[in-house]
Image 1: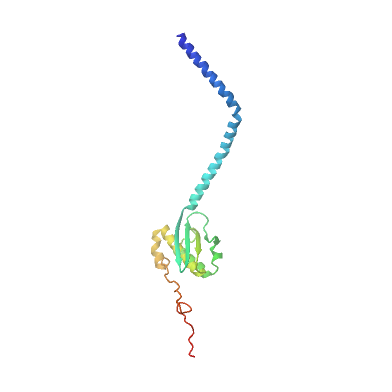
Image 2 (image 1 turned 60 degrees about the vertical axis):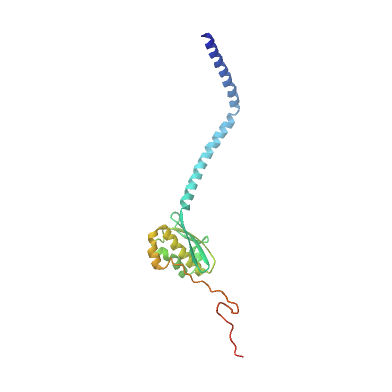
Length: 189
């Protein structure tokens, strides 16, 4: 029995010696450990803030997208259900980008038909064509996006003529003529 206890006591002594040696090493690195803990405490709120930012981006990033076309202009429209209720065209308010009342009415027409004027935040990228064809392309894009948002809107918007893509394009120039059909002035002598 004594041998077992001696062995057991020896093991205890060995383990005690092993435990004391690392403790001395740990006492040297206690400053480093404390610094790491402080950094971790500081980093944790940042992660929470980043998660909140991601959540807000996800909320904002949920949108309904559609493209509208007219002549050579193309409008990429995004309807956001959350955020400030405004219409932005090429990073400008639509009042500034489309100056005339007629063009503003063209853009607002699908929203007014569905009574959704103040329910969406709309961002639009438009390129090509002139200002009037751009406004009609935006109208076409908004109405398509509204149908994507709620398929029940299709019937009313179709009846109003907002969903039909206007197929009229500029006719190409022919050789021997000044424009598509304009010929040179005829002279008798």
